[in-house]
Amino acid sequence: MTYREVYESGVNTLKENDCKEAVLDARLLLEYICGTNRNDLLVHGDREVPSEAVKQYREYICRRAGGEPVQYITGEQDFMGLTFKTHESTLIPRQDTECLAEEVMMHLHDGMRILDMCSGSGCILLSLLKYSNDCIGVGAELQPQAVALARENAENLGIEAVFIESDLFGRVEGKFDIIVSNPPYIESAVIDTLDREVREHEPMSALDGGADGLDFYRKITEEAKGYLSRGGKIFYEIGYNQAEDVSELLRRSGYIDIVVKKDLAGLDRVVYATYLED
Image 1 (tube, one colour):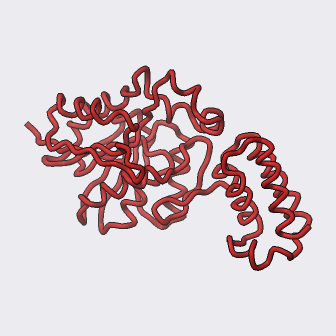
Image 2 (cartoon, one colour):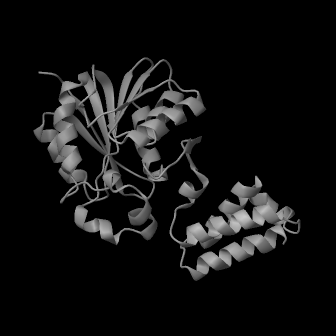
């Protein structure tokens, strides 16, 4: 089969299974297997694809048609210009979260200490360390598989960071200039309405934020005060409808200068605030 024929067969299969991004996903999977790029479809669409590659492609298309995300099939995802390994033990790094990382970078200075709470794959912390100088980074994560993946990502990217298995601040030590977190924030009742690939494949522990979606914000906001340096800042990713509630939690806990930032879609995405020690 030619490159174009293989690709078109993948698109058709995904469309038959109601994949929203059938055209894109079919192309990405073929490029991953063949080590090609988007230009190959236009320039070399008539070249033959080895039978083993066709077989592997069909297997991958079958997995995608069954709802498995492309990023778990390929085992990688780009974030902030870096490539991260992915695994079903962690959320897939998303473009929306780049808004959080970019906002932190606006306030990041050389030599700062950063704590990434609920660090998952490590994409936020490792991106911040990559694009700063002499900062010290610690990632705290409950799931051991996620901790192992974050450490692997750090090693692959050549970035020095410490990732610890910790139930929130349970094993965290020291003070930090910045605490950043993309915690679970989906309301429990909403989980069943999420897209199939999310609810069936991404870890519930990284999604479910309790009845109102605010459980982790409450815990982190209060406990973080014991780990922030004077004038330190806390940064959260939030759901589109949570800015007011999270801001109020911060205000009641004594934080000041509370700011809400929108993402590229114009939705509230980041809340950050400053804490001054008593």
